[in-house]
Length: 212
Image (cartoon, rainbow, N blue to C red; front, side, top):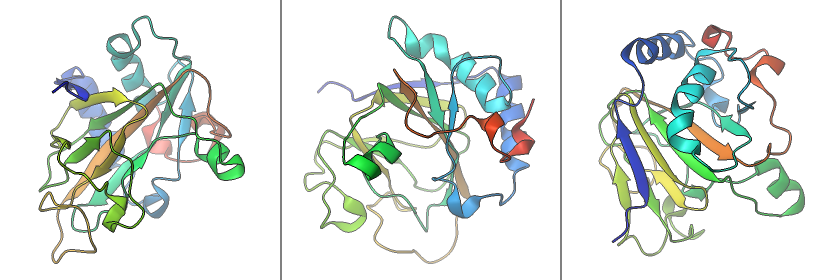
């Protein structure tokens, strides 16, 4: 079966990866409750923060001859005993909510910062199922799983359904007892055009600790 992902370990040079870890750690709990709603646009200009430096470092292996205008990015920070994201397909979120029109990024990707118990990224061609826990697809036989590992980068088609498994690498269905270390990743959507209403990092006052 054809692989759904392109996976790269050791994706960043050591010094850049260590600086990224330090800067993300320095954010503490800033906007933790709205981590998935705090998204930014980067159009490949001079980098203003460490994540934009990371994007430039990853760009050659991603873009190739593809027409990519820039990257929408955000931080994903969660405990795998309390997964807060359902199975979904990446989309122009504001456009979808205002018009119902579904537009996907050219490519989706996730950069992993650390290792945790469980918390695998699960990908499938099957659509989300509204009646299932975490909107998990009906047919799970073709799931591709990617375990969180430091400095691991996974790239996949922007139309694929994906979600996060819990601390036991099962479909999340409510909170689990206990608490794991925080699962930290940076999702990066590679677009052929700028998605609706997404500001640049410099246009916001958020996550100042990431600045270069």
